Image 1 (tube, rainbow, N blue to C red):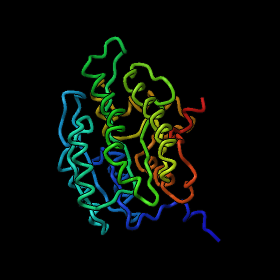
Image 2 (image 1 turned 120 degrees about the vertical axis):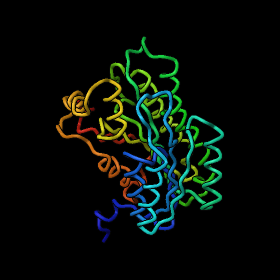
Image 3 (image 1 turned 30 degrees about the horizontal axis):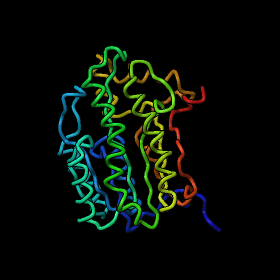
Image 4 (image 1 turned 180 degrees about the horizontal axis):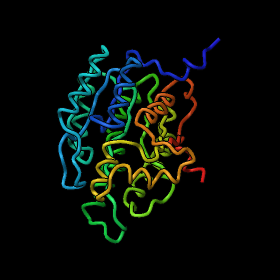
Length: 275
């Protein structure tokens, strides 16, 4: 008889996973967990600061640390330095994955940035940076990877969206617009890739304890605790969400237990969307 506990943990032995925004936070957690499940990892991050957002982004040292952690688990790891806003860099990263591994089975679109202001005060640079990273970057990376994913025996795409992808959050109009777009894109991709046996799902995290949230707090002149307090009142479960808990949802979506789940949005939000 099938053990339901093991059915919910994917066996990714011999498979290859590409994770964007891989150098820290949720991306790092995803990479290490996928490697623990047997996958080789292509870890992509921009590894430099940008004009927008103003907070520091991941570094090459942090990306190399992820690579070392994956290799320490006995898996192959490929560092990819690329900006998901740049079509040429993303296409080149896809070609590098094919040259290095010859296959791709899992894509986790995790790269994201955030800023905050009333919509009428957002600059063109803020709007462009958030929408082009959080929405167009998902489309762009998936386009670069889809040829390999369609050849996989069980291709899986998981887009890290947000609870902001299904409800409005004041002073985050650009982020909300982008994440709503990710939800719609997820559903459209699921329909178009069903014939190739590729599932496409999204995860809707709430406010996750992460470097991005800490960076946002600093940008707003707040502490991370202040930011958590602002969002925790929406949750039914009054606890901070961790990157590992989002990773747990990712692993379930990649498992055989979820093989008939596609076009779905799975919230990891402490019950905030129930209100």
